[in-house]
Amino acid sequence: MKQHAAIGYKVLSTGNSHMLKAAAIIALSHHEKFDGSGYPNGLSGNDIPLFGRIVAIADVFDALTSERPYKKAWSIERATQMIHDCAGQHFDVNCVNAFFTDFDEVLRIKNKFVDDEYH
Image (cartoon, rainbow, N blue to C red; front, side):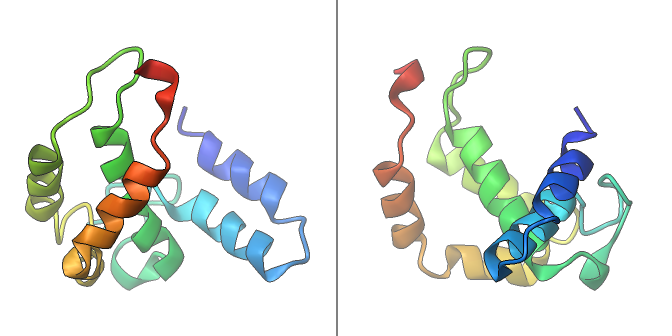
């Protein structure tokens, strides 16, 4: 499971476009944690690329609030509380603040791309 970040990076890093280069960085760094306890490289703080710090929050929010075959979706309230509680440890505080700056837009996007497979 933990190898998917490095594998994704390897696949995407062969691209020449700015979009694929950004996607490669995201793939490699979205499971790093602000306190250094993440993977695959144990990066911390601003050593984690900004793309990875941003996507880490979106990825966790989506994972928590989406139903999966193995779990029920968390409520928006429970997920947002967890993200707030993990600011400075799992997540960059500045990125958490930015995530909640226009939270109505976050929810609009989430609702637009609902995965109906498990509903």
